[in-house]
Length: 409
Ligand code: DI6
Ligand code: FE
Image (cartoon, rainbow, N blue to C red; front, side, top):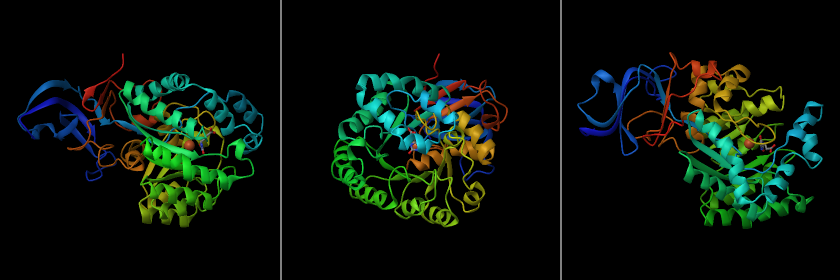
């Protein structure tokens, strides 16, 4: 490290989440962190800090510092809402029944097609602000409520535009294979042709997506159709991920893992074979307890088996107007523990290190380590276990995005 730095935070306890350090949090007590050019240049016990003149010094007052949180699976940009559908489901209709009756995802498709880019942008802002206020510094945003070229592009451009105005990195994913649009009713293979031949190449040409996703389910697309989308994405050099095994078992998880998917998401209905395929291929399990909770599902993902097989488990909001209209990654940490049986340390790893891996970004973020981005959150707590345990009152005291203090208010 050089003898000067932009920012020095000292008198903190760091939950580095570095797996090479002992304990679930990779904790370094009484630590110091030096930042230059938006990156961590030194982190370790304060007494070992080399001589360093800092432009700005922050006294952490014994609080805990964590990596900036990463929400690795959202559908943040959409038109309208589905409050009436929620009431119908509370009255006994299932998510699939609502979808098959032309509601569900297709109801949001109609609203998203009808919305202007400006309306989509302003609709997404409060949801994004809610995430950012909790210390989220990277958000993945999917398309998938257009199901036609222009509206898919409109959603992805809106997502990119949000990152120009808020202190956050937005990672975009093209989810054109989310549902069958009404104009292709009865012709799913022809819609997959459109996705592969028109939508994905256009999105790749404009560099509007960092990855490609698909919904493999009885109310969406078959494993074979999803395989075609994956093959096309690979030809276009785009990484893939999949909504898999959310409502039933199909083999999508094994297929996607073997095809090198970054992550498979939901996975309540995976089998032992799927777990083995994920472990073998380094595919991240993205767990979405908010969707499980909202849809009042009863089948939980096999967390014990994933843990025993060494599969990385990320946690995310799945923020969307149908199965999870909840803009809180902190609440997902609590739900991940209460509903799925994660430990508090696994929950924090799930929204930092493993979430970064699910986006293919583990070389740049998700851990506090020299060389990585200085996306960091300071929390007024005595132990990092409080992040999963408490909800509502515990807020970040400072948020650093690329080494800049961006704490709101
Ligand atoms: N699974 C989900 O959880 C979201 N999409 C998907 O394939 C939900 C989308 C919605 O209901 O609008
Ligand atoms: Fe989703």
